[in-house]
Image (tube, rainbow over the protein chains, first blue to last red):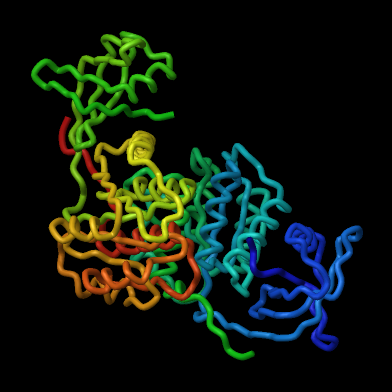
Length: 245
Length: 245
C-alpha cells in the first residue's frame, strides 16, 4: 500500500495541492474522505503533509491543504540512468522496479530491432509512479521512451556524457570508469536475442562496451548488475537527506 | 525451456546415466523418446552429451548412454553465499533466481522470528534445480535450509569465514572487505519487518554488519545488491571455463 501520493499541481501561495485521476483512484480505493491526513511529493525533492479538503468521485479530482513541507537533497551530484529494451512486461517490470528502488535518475525504454513485445508508454509511466510511491522517495526519475535506437542515440548525443552498452566484447567496469571523467552515464542492454547487426554498428561508433563476465545473464539481470556496480563505483547508492522542514 | 538435464547417478565405467522422477517428468513434457539426443550435468563441473536409451512413464525412470564429456572449472577460488529469510514466495523466488544466475556458491534459506511465510524445503530445492538448468551452469550451488537463526549460526561457526548481515548500522562494503582476509563469505538479510531484537543480539556477537546506503530497499533487492557488490569486489563475476573435453 503506497504511503505517499504524488501531485504535480502545487500552489505554495495558497498552500493547496491538486491530484490527478490516477491519484484520486488510489484515494478512493483507500476509502479516503475530506479531513483525512495524507503525505505527498512533487517528485522534485519535497514531501508535503496535509489534509484532504475535497474529493470528487465523478470528476476524479481532489484537493488538499498543505500543512507541512520537508525538503530533501540527493547525497550526490553525478547521475546514472538505464535504458530498458521493450520486452516481455514481467521482465521490464522487474528492471523498472529494482532500478527505481536503487535510485536511477533516468529511466529510458526503447524499442529495439529484436524487441518481440511492445509496452505502451502510459503503462510504463504509471508503473514507475507506483513504484516510486512504494519506495517513498521524493525524487522521481525522468522517464523517456524511444521508438528505435537511432532516436535514442540522437537524444543521448545532446544529453548524455557516456553511453555504455553491455557486451562480452567490452571492457571491465573498472577500466571503463577509469576513462570516464565525471558527467552522467546511461546503461543500455539489448533485448532477448541481443542487438541487431545494424544496432551494434551504431553502438560501436557512439558508445562504450562494458563486460560483466562470462556467465549467461538474462537482460534484466545484466542491466541491474551493471547498475549496481556503477552506482557503487560512482558512489551513488547513498540516497537523499533532509535539508529543512 | 531448459536445455540441460541433471543426473546424480552417473556411471563412468559403463558410460550410462540415470535420471530421477523430476527430470523424467520434464522429458515427458518435452515428448522425448529413446534415441533422442540430450545434454545433462552432474552439477559438479561436468556437462555430458548422450542419447536417451529408455524412458518409463509409469516408474518415472530413464537412462541415457553417455557419448561426450566436457569439464569446466570455476574462474575463482573464493566463494560467496547468501541466506534468504523465509518470506513471500514471489520474493524468495526472485532472490533465488537472480543469485543462482549470478553464480552464488551457497544458497541458504532460514526461518526468522519475523518470517510471516514458510516455504517447504522440497519446493525450494526443485526451484533451484530449474533455475540452474535454465542458466546452463555445470555447477550447482549447495542448498541448505535452517529452522531458525541459532541453527544457522551454529552451522556457520564451522563452515563460514565471515558472516555478514545487512544493517544501516554496518560499515561500507569496501571497509568490510578490507578487514576480511580470504575465506568464504555468507550474506544475510532480515525478512520484511527486519530481525527481531533477539536475533540482532546474536548477530552482533557472531557476525559483521554491512550498510548499503540510506535508501529503503526491499529485503530481496538489498540481498541482491550486496551479492553483486561483493561478487564484484571479490572478483567472482567471471563464471567458469572449459578445461577439457
